[in-house]
Length: 462
Image 1 (cartoon, helix red, strand yellow):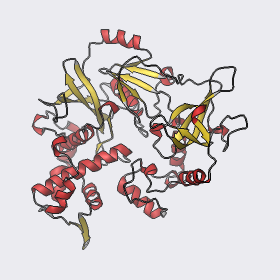
Image 2 (spheres, helix red, strand yellow):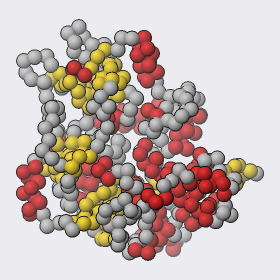
Image 3 (cartoon, helix red, strand yellow):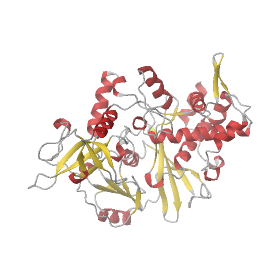
Image 4 (cartoon, one colour):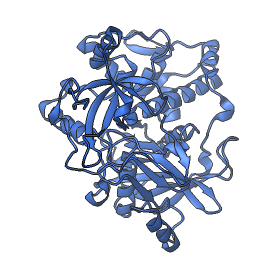
């Protein structure tokens, strides 16, 4: 339902999101609509969606008046069956009260979602995956295995306060769309842009320096003056040809120092927050490296996505945040970013793991990457590898390998340790799920990056 469009003159029926006197927050919670047909904040309704045109159970999160004379409102709704990236402003005509017993029963089940439900994880459940109530211990184990964020009630009091403040502040998207390069993108989440920009309906980005502005006219003027045609920092990887047969252009990675190119990295974080729900690093970027993936053509280097990495991670994280822009998703770039993070770990002589919790899309990408890499090695070595061998060859942490193989039923626990339980037939069955011709690979011989001195020093001390 959320898509990237190549830029054309666009008309939209939704008015700009600006804080007005008539805008209301959750302090006006009410479970039913009033007699004059106005829905209160917190009302559960049936709403016809933009993404499929069908009615779905939803909750009214906010509302604002349209016009000064009539009591007309636009409503901001959350679809209870879906991730909040699909939340949107809708007109009153798309809402209807829920009255039938079947709809009311369904609504009750959505109010307290099961831990194993697709709403909780953001991932669609497969055939036969039934929702069920679970114990607190099973829930905690599930969260640990799948790296999902813990429920609010499982956090400390201080963490609960921070989480509720975050939910309250970010419940309504402030910026509805952006223009970046040749694409117009619908945003997914709230992002804390400076006050001057935070209520804009649409922002316009220079795709090279990431400066953002209010209007197309200002962007055009900027592009005439801006001499930049690539990210700042150091070019550390350039492919000779496109990464696979389905790609048109070669790719390049740039390493950007958050301390040296602070404004670019802050803009990158604010941009990425529009598509990530729980990203928290916006302005404190000095302690991170940013690895920006681009496509190269005759006009310049076009940003595809990036991952960030702490300069000194005590926990051994080789990735803090990862994003593929919606205009480049479903092209294998998420796995390319992950693969590159592990190539850097190999050059450092370390095993790595991503910072938790992973987003729903991040989890899908990592699970797919780990499975593909591990199955490929088990096929090539005919299963004659230990879990420790797999870790040293891939730079993937042992715990991540064990959890991945457990989900595939390829490991068993025997006499206090995990043992591979693999046959060539089992490996081939799992590899059938991958279209190998569509793989996007890193040519490690073309990486010009070397570990930084602080990493080298810590390695010598150990």
